[in-house]
Image 1 (cartoon, rainbow, N blue to C red):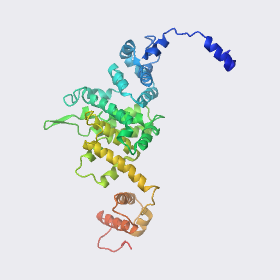
Image 2 (cartoon, one colour):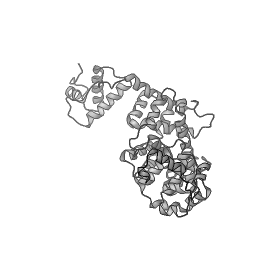
Image 3 (cartoon, one colour):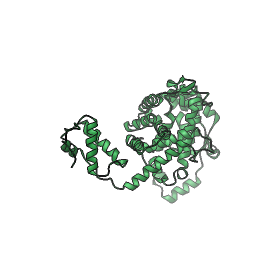
Image 4 (spheres, rainbow, N blue to C red):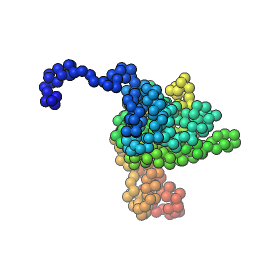
Length: 387
């Protein structure tokens, strides 16, 4: 019984053992090939349909043509697999540095469409604007560009690449034990899922009004179907819902400190991931020569927002004491607790962040003016005059 062998005895047995290889596995390993051994294997466990692509991606192997054809033929069997198992195979695949070629192969087999039929209308949407596979072709290019960004973080963000790398690869919150890189790739895959249902010609232009909101609802349904955690569902929904916002900031006539503050305040820990997804989306429209040169306005503003964000964090150091709190506001202006106080505190925080308030006296004066503007205080009365 080899369980009770000494190390020396085991090594001797191993060296003298004859390799049993009835299915030619050693040859497949040497050739770097994923090959099925029986047409029945997908019937026995339909999740193997996904494992074909996940294993090929992890090992950087090719998929045997007959195996690929069998996946295409049996793709509908995937509906028998538990959603949690599908999610794990998909996220494991997406965590790999170069998942794009294998997602593309999965799509060509018809398996991706079987898993996510919500994407199918985008295949024939905007074919004049996106000649290759319409909106869906643009989406696949977005995934390719996001992976390019991940592989070139030091080049793209010379000062902050380690901080970004930590967010992308060291954060496992909300992703069922997988790194945020997988979630960001899901975000780019579904960022335009709402375009086909909102496409409309207006003044000779094809427009997609509210496709972000429609897409966010669809993405939330998909995330729930995959049994993602509640946090993961909300993160994916947010990446789709706000993917237009960085572009809007980039093309504003003036990018104010206040607008940047609100972006990071509203998106919180999803802000940097959102900017990376938005940059990948933009890169899908640029040529190889244009990409990464900061000549494009969207690219330049996105990178500047990321740089400025980390710079401010570095300058602020430990979390500063708040300039003013709700108790002092209520006491000074004789107000009762309620949503109004929370709203006012947010306004104060924003004014502090953009440098409009630098002292408690200025904070109290700001509060008074704001309360007057909300018809809470009578401007003709001296009550509540900051001293």
